[in-house]
Length: 132
Image (tube, rainbow, N blue to C red; front, side, top):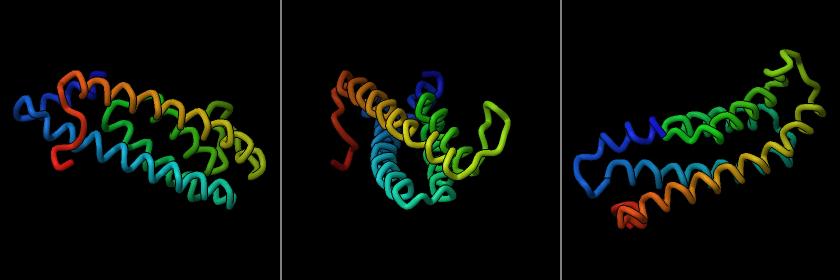
């Protein structure tokens, strides 16, 4: 919440143009990235999963979407065959087994965050980016 409040402080007026653009760009990025993650998982491309996890982790952190950020960080590590919690290397099979339920969880976390953000903007009488 603190990160999101800092972004709101960058808005120049009550139209919330800056933050709205940033949030809706995040929605678009996340949607595309989740599709790419699904494709990478199907093809068992762990390096791509790691890179996509890293990318979405950064975007999520920029808005303060901490649950998605944390899950994406796990995907990033598992994609590099590393279990950060256990501090041990993983086999490709084990990494994929850990990523599969994590992909489902992170998508649910994202849906919850997206709903919260859209509700917040709706309360401000904003239903989409300024150009929409």
